[in-house]
Image (cartoon, rainbow, N blue to C red):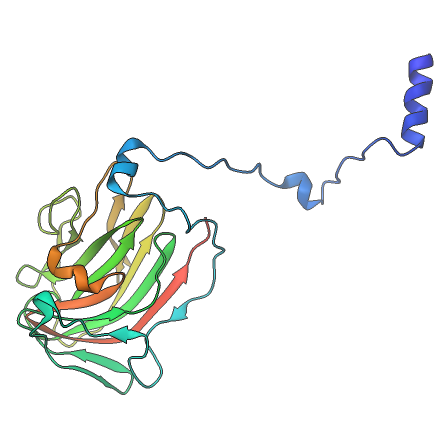
Amino acid sequence: MRRIILMVAVCLAGGCASAPSPGSRDAWAPPAREASAATPVEAAAGHADSGDRASPSAGPRALLGGKDLAGWRVPGEMAFRRHGEVRWADGVVRLGPGKPLTAIAWAGEFPRSNYEVQVQAQRSAGGDFFCGMTFPVGRSHCTWIVGGWGGQVVGLSNVDGKSAAQNATTRRMTFETGRWYRLRLRVTSERIACFIDGEAVIDQARGGHAFAIWPQQEPCRPFGIATYLTGSAIRSVTLRRLGE
């Protein structure tokens, strides 16, 4: 009896916390997720994404627009020394065929994970890849090849040391010269996904795999779009950060 009287007195003094109501946000909030440690394979391959976590999902940011190529540069070193003409006109960037490579590369910072890029591109001349999209994957980089190896190969270069024509992402597709294609790249902490005109063409897990680029693509880091012996046109590049 004394214990009951004491408990009632404490509650009357304000010592009992009230439970949240069913409509309270705190009542239904999920538990905080603990940060998982990188596996030895991920650490060795440089897949850690520290410094690029928990960014809220935001609307797309246009990287290509306005009246010129502000924010971009034209690589002129290594395999790009004999690049083709790069012109901006009427909202479209035209990359002339290089000997062998022509590209535009983003000159600013770029997220390493949890982001999505959308590009509209077309092959205007030649018969090889009209979009070699180099992009960050954690501390590494990779290149999404669209229309390579004679014009039809789609894949990632490189995965576990194998090129876009030799790994599990390899796919053959037919591309029409002069036709615009919608390319979408999504990089999360777990996967790399690629879409062409809304169709999923690549779904590659990151864990347990190493990603790298050919030395020729180094000047395109952190993000760039290159062509190989081929003319290309690009009329839209947007970047959107993804929430965890």
